[in-house]
Each structure stands twice: as structure tokens, then as C-alpha cells.
Amino acid sequence: MCGIAGFWTTSALTEAPERILRNMTAAIAYRGPDGDGFFWDDSAGIALGHRRLAVVDLSEDGRQPMISRSGRFVLVFNGEIYNFQRLRTILSPLGHSFRGHSDTEVMLAAFEQWGVASAIEQFVGMFAFAVWDRAERTLIFARDRFGKKPLYIHIGDHLVGFASELKALYCLPGFEPRIDRQSLTLYLRHNYVPSPRSIYESVAKLLPGCLAKVKFEVGKPSIAYSTYWDARAVRDSARAAPLAGSEVEILDSLDELLRDAVAIRMIADVPLGAFLSGGIDSSLVVALMQAQSARPVKTFCVGFVESEYNEAQFASAVARHLGTDHSETILTPRDALDRVPRLASIFDEPFSDSSQVPTLMVSEVARREVTVALSGDGGDEIFCGYNRYSLGPRYVATLPEIAISIAQEFGCSNQKRESEDVGCCL
Image: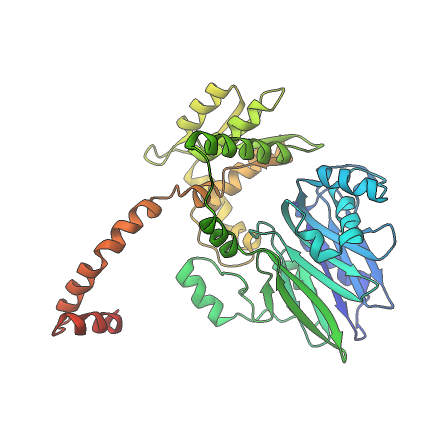
């Protein structure tokens, strides 16, 4: 996890731009405790800041903001490009040389070779970045396919600002954090504020799989959005051309994909571990990690003093079976209450996931020993592991009977009328 922040303005500032930029990155300093970096182009009015959590290439060669070899692109980047080594082997014969071995440097070479929009399609990873294109005088934002890394964008009258977290935007001149009532309504419905909205009126979250290009026209910023990856299109394509082969062959292919996906996420120059809950998803990830590791993988689990909610024993059983270096922490009611006052500053927006406290605690415990931790998050969404995926079809099948029952309760006169009135009643 790193932190990025910055702005582009065409108007005179009442405060030194360097001070504004430093205040923005200071607000999210905990995202990158290993150093900071700044870029300011007075003639263009562009400012880019970075807080670094060093994972790959711990030397100064991995420091950001980073400028491409030709000087055209200036990049601040949060995340990891997992296939950067493979891309490097493609780019090197094309004439690109590298000072260090960071993924950031490979990204810039890809921008030089293919252009930003085409290069993104080559990236496998989680990322949010801002890149200043000096030749086109364009500021470009991008976010990974599933939106794992956050990116907030503020559009003002003569200024555009961006940051990994909302709190950094408070430092921008003229920024007013006015609550967006529509976003508040969506939060009450979904238990979080969905993209592209944010809790504030003048701030938007860049959608997953999207790219945004900012230009200034007559002194005011304009932003053009485009989609480089669409989950629906991928789904429709898969439906149109189902996998061929036997069940065994398909399972072998899945095993190969999962092993590769885990392996490239284990590339790091710092200590690495995993969150282990004892469920299928995290257990599978840890099993694949251990199968490709020369030493016991460090695993971390948080349990509860209430036995009906405690699943730590399952994590311990998996850890013993796989031979990991396992750490278990029991979360007490006092532990949870002590962390509640910090939640608003950590999440910036209203957020109602009940797992936020144990996730915060297991992250704190893991950080004492490792810098990077893999988890099983996303497995249930991909492999239909939640109960609603199996229960949903059954509920849908009974909806007509439920609708008729409700309609009769409200005194509807006939079946056709009932179906219409139910919508009104509900």
C-alpha cells in the first residue's frame, strides 16, 4: 500500500504549491512510511506527490514520482503490477533499458512503447495511478479492473485534485467537504457509498476498469472517461464460448491459473505472509503459497472470545496441516471498542462492513512481522461461495407466491391486479 496525491491548476495559488502538496501527502503518511517524493512543474501548474511503502526494489531506483526515460511521462502509482518481470522481458529487446528492478519503471517503459491506454491492458495487478503526459499536456488517471486500489478525484473551478484517500483532499485550496445527500441515501441502502459517488458532492471515485483524461479548456478542467475492461463483456464472452474439455482438464487449468496467480503475488523484497481464517478461500491461497515457498509461510488469524463466532480453531487446523508459521490473536470486546474511534479516519466514508474491526486488528498484528499479506478476499464472489448464491434461485422461484400473499394481505382483487398492486405497496 502506497499513497498518491496531487493537483493541477491554472490559477494563482495563495499558498506555496509545495506546501499544499506536502500537506496532502502528510495526511496519508501512514500509507507509505518508507519515504516521500514530490514533483512540481511551475510552468504547467502540475503537482504530484507520493508516500512509499517499499515492496519491490527498496533502493532509490524505485522512488516516486518517477520520470520516464524520454522525460515525457511523470508517474505516481499505488499498487503492484504482478507481471512486471514478464513485461520487462518483452520491453528490453525493444530498446528499453532499466536502472532498477521496480514495476514502476516497467510501467513507464510500457507507456513509452504502447501509450498509456494500450499499456494498461497489458498490466496484471492492482493499481491506481496518475501520470502527467508532458507532450499532450494531459493528466491521466487509471484504476485496476476490480477497483482494489482507491482513487478519489475532485474537480474545482480552476483545479483538479486527486488522492488515495479523501482526507488528503481537505488540503486543497477552496475544497469544501459538503455531504452529498444522494450518496448518503445510497449508503443507507448498500451499507457503503458505491462508485462513482463519494460522500462529498465535489468528489468522485474513479470506477474500476476505467481511465480518465483531464485537460484544461479556457482555464477550466474537463475530464473524459473511458472503459478499458468490462466485467459484463468478459462474462458475455465466456457464455458465448464455454470452456472445452473434460472436468479433469478444466480443473487442471484452474489449478495452473491459481498457482500462477499466487506465485506472482509472492514477488517481494520484504517479508510476506497471509491472512488465514480457516475458510476455503484463504486456506487455498495459503496452501498454494506454502507449496511454492522454501520456508514456512507466516499466517495470521483473529478469533473471538465468543465461541459461537470464533473460527480460529479451523485456521489453526489448516496451519498445522500445511506447516505454516501461525499467529493467533483473540479479539475481546475491549479490543473492538478501543478501535471504534479510529474507524472514521481509517475509512474516510461511512462503511458498514461488520468485518472492519477484526480486519483492522489482524492487519495490525501482521504488520509487526510482514509488510505484505495475501488473503482470500474475492474468492466467494468468483466461486459463488456465499449462501445467497445457492439460496437466491430458490427464493426467486417462490416470489410469485410471496407476491400473491402480500397482495391478498393488502386486499387486491385479482391475480393480475395483485402483481401490479404489489409493486405499489412495496
